[in-house]
Image (tube, rainbow, N blue to C red):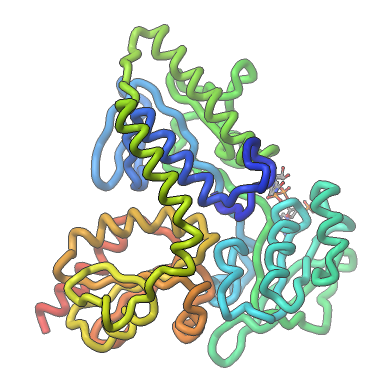
Length: 429
Ligand code: NDP
């Protein structure tokens, strides 16, 4: 989930952040006996019964499957998009907006729907001004969202405007946008000077790994039955949330869809005499976990202000995983091992996904690789000097030289490959 503040989820009168909601759901699922594997599915085989699901680490068999893979933000595909990707152009204002490179700069958001409006409002926290570039005569966003944008003195809306291309500065970072008037189809002579451009132009469903084994519409969204809104064209395979829902795309509607899919799945398994009962976590264990989580939550605000900064007194170079700028400086200068640095930000949903995945991979290199996590909100000057324009960003250093940069969330194999290459080079040297 990439949304920051979720205001319309029942039961949270003060709102809740996307990452926090995800964490609570995770704990709830575990309590009810779910086994969680945080890894990418690379293929599925719906022709076999039970179905077969493959990740890089395992092959699993299942009598029924619920697909809830969501949707990924679309890109504009302007000519110089790759050149400035993560150097000013981004598809996630929520993940990348906090980057110090955007602080007090003029920024642009493309789109006229709820996503674009939400991004524009969010960016006003950091930017000196936000330009919302709407290709049509009007915004398609809901009235409430439109009004928030129009009421904000920090957002300037440009109607009938689209982006033709981008240009950068001497350091290779985005500096300006070449715009077109969509009514006349003529280029707008004056480039728009912005340090960042964020896309809010809709989403593409994450269905490629299904390899056309079930019915999708022309945009790739899974086709679900009118009857229960979760059954797909393959019996025993169900769908939940944004991977089939083009319209509502709210955390609460996706959660409701997940519940429908779970009930449909249970009925299917029961009818086919395939249902096996999984025991809920022992009540005592569950209670203990809830109590521990509650305690942690209660301590969290205190922890924030009193958390001891890592310094000379508590830094231990023998530990593999560290946090903060002191540890980064020490390891950068003193560690003989390759150093992996992960830049995160507090509101970044993908960072939450990457952390446990990366941690599992790093465990395989416990004695040979050092790791530091940098929160760009806590250590903005470090993020700025590292040229961070989006999170999550993983940088790998060897002998004080930066040897790899991995933006976003990739498969475990990609991190393994880079880490292993560095170790092979170290031992060969
Ligand atoms: P939408 O499809 O609603 O809007 C996409 C916007 O991008 C439109 O304004 C569209 O323009 C524009 N666009 C598409 N392609 C291009 C392009 N190539 N160049 C320029 N502009 C382009 O997507 P959203 O992600 O905004 O919303 C999807 C759904 O999710 C909606 O139902 C929305 O309500 C919901 N949502 C709700 C939120 C909330 O309530 N907090 C937050 C985010 C989403 P045009 O209008 O001209 O087609």
